[in-house]
Image (cartoon, rainbow, N blue to C red; front, side, top):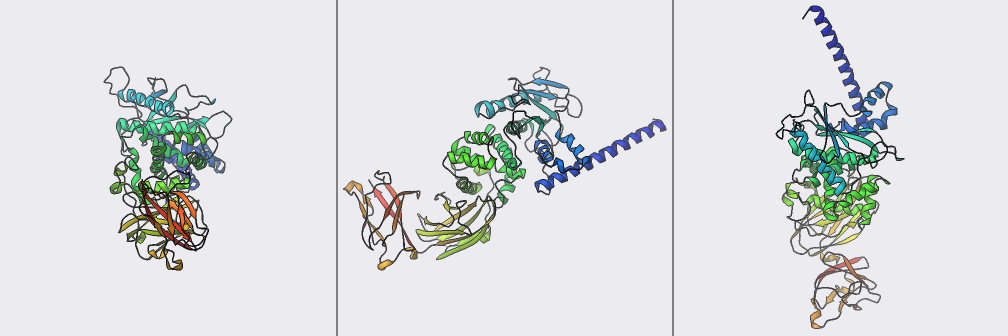
Length: 553
């Protein structure tokens, strides 16, 4: 090489280095703007590119300097990269674009001898399966083209980068709606590398399921407030289509360490991936269709409002479901119960409970604590030696969005009870250790005062006589058609509950003290009750009595 040639070479190298340094500076400046907008200190790999990154740039575009707007244009107006070869998937749902030489080349092994690398052949079959599962079987909307019609074939590109895959916006959809976009997907060209936990074709499988669901989601409606639900659904559907792979396990350790302080709507990808467990709870309880219904509702409402609307159709509130979710999260790892709660619960980490929240039973147990927004708080009370206790939860503002529940390792529990209520805690055997959880679906932290009275002093003592019931056991087979409550305080209320503590009948003493209150052994629908254990709660003059009844037919 001549000196002149060397000089030219060095000049070109220096110019390219300067341009590269400028590009890096502009990208770093854009990243800083995105972090500031999202309120995070660092961006996960998936937040540094792809449609979440692009959408954030679009939201902050007007506030950027002219130089940064030009840099953002390169990110926002991305079209699919050029590749050397293209094929259609076997069912024609996709066009796959790939290189066989150069930086983005895929593995070239071709055992079938059809002239197409086996990696691409396999990816095409996997992608067709994902389309069938998500659109044909589950009923999600197909990705739309720029005119608002289902795409004739969705574009997949194979790229040499550190990610599993990325879904990128390619333009707005012209169908008179705001917030829906056309897109394309890039998949890792080898599915290897240190940043990829699930390598090879299993990595292709979960990535195809996850990223294609993002492409589907973009055809519904994107709102910035819904980022968390995009990732929750993408991670959930990975495990629905490929339950044996479990790539999302990689995000659970941090989640279980921090679950008691993470808002349900946290946009941090790592937590949103792990919160796919909430959708697993819903789909295990109601079927996969409930998630599709939420996405259909997202056309009209923000994700959280859409979720509340759909849950209402299943006769459950979001507050109740979050409280139930907290219970499911407790029964994981060594606490898991075969056949109950999450299918993979035994493989998960466990919620840790602070030593300051592990209490010993005494006459009156008091515990004051904050519950973070859209989260929950666990505490335990050990060695309870009474069969009937009374729990009292209070917040600064009594609200149905703050609920408590309790259970033991055998998953015995009551339905969630609102803050501000006095709730009976029925214990089947003593001594008993109980776990309590208080959930908060408000958008701000609430301070809770919890009291558990564990002594028989909760029995009313008007006129010196406790309430009594008889005959107990009540044997209908002996011809008994009714039973009586004695020593009931004047104008007190009697609530009869089944074994799950669901109210089945309410009686009232409208007379003076010790007037017998008769129960005809029927529920509120007029049906004779079945054999089993029942509970009754007598409340009057600020006092409460709890006891058990045995009915034998």
